[in-house]
Length: 177
Image 1 (tube, one colour):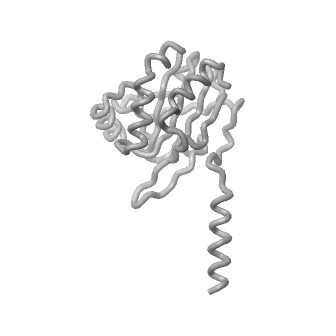
Image 2: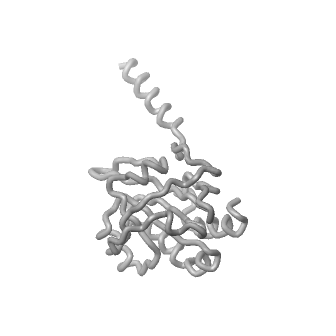
Image 3: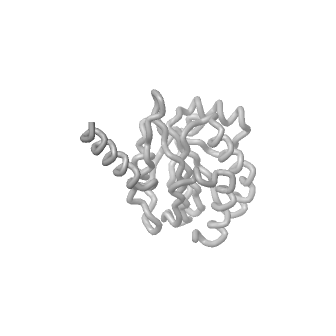
């Protein structure tokens, strides 16, 4: 019994030591290019936004409370992002059809990208967790400058979802700081 406890404690301590951001993509790194389908099933590539700030945010699941709040706040501030020469790209493991339903239901007009095979999620080092019978990506945001470099990473957006859009806008205004 004691041996099982020690093994369980070691596993739990090991999991606690894993950082929220496990990827190698840190500020100053070139953002990996990708192409994913949007809610309209149109392919969207990061490279088509060269010359603009890109807010690349990863979120767990369409139509869930935290993800809806985060999306509503980005939508609320969309004109401010546009004025700052920025685009918002949301990525989850959901399908284009799920994104289309979410966008219609919540009146979202920015691009949501479908990554059901978690190709881009993995490339950006965003952790994936099993939640019941499905996998979900963790909530993280990457700010990419107009030259295509990652300038800021928010590794644990769950701590402050309601103010996240405002924080990202402030970082853009501060040149990515």
